[in-house]
Length: 162
Image (tube, rainbow, N blue to C red; front, top):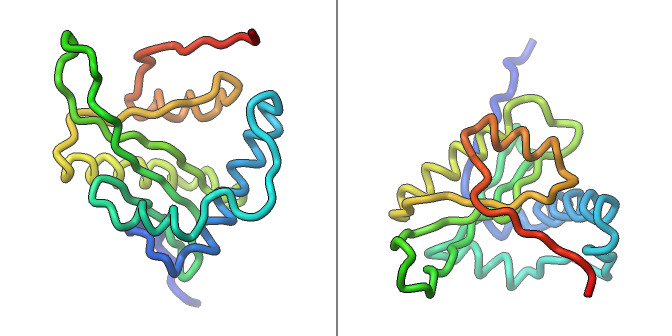
């Protein structure tokens, strides 16, 4: 009997591009179904090879992946947030968790927690003072997940049709 494979988190490479696209598509499909007023279908990958390459080249951005054996089963896209232009804002260096997704059949194995922990480590290594993220109001599962990990609502963005 072979030993169980341990999930590890590592920086993505362009060799992971096809797996990244599959994970982004899973996330995009969730958002299209939950918010058809906000997200639409499109042809081809929503994140081009060139775009992913720019994220990986950093230095202020990266994509982390969770890997189970040879399979990429999760990702977390980390991007910088521009400093607030308001002179009265306290200076902060912010890294944004822009996207986080774990393959549906691999959920409930603490993979998302590992990706967030690795993201926090990466952000601290970049000198970040804060890590922020956005969650659509319809994604209650993600909101509970992030709250359990210590994230709290900072600003509620509201929207209505014009």
